[in-house]
Image (tube, rainbow, N blue to C red):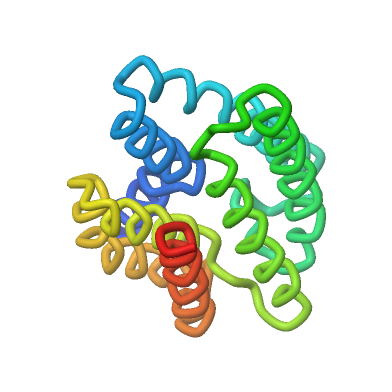
Length: 193
């Protein structure tokens, strides 16, 4: 069995622009602009500890047990537990920020991400929103509106990520478009609210 080069490239694009990576890029670039490199490292580490680590553990366990087909929770029925764990992780991060770092710019980011995830979770009853597109577009829009070079680069990468998600057949065009729209709205909210 040979692997089509398009599938291999699409898989790498999906990994490079995974929501975990997009969260790190978004938090890191925003923190670097406000607090410098040391602040960026700290902000990414705190975000990873509260959100990425619990989700990575969930993904590993669900795939290992055979409850999920892959780490992307590609089946719509796999999504509710993903949203539950992510919601709890974001609430824990928000509580930490409110208690210990009340002036943190990250509070707004967590609130916007929680709202974005609530919309995606609600939509899951009918459609499986592309979280890859939602997070990549959130990061691209939020950072581009800050005039960050990382945001402009991500904007240019969005069509490639769309192609990747469709090539891998993880999403339909409507699911990809909906993820993009929700992410763009969240990015605008992050900047303008």
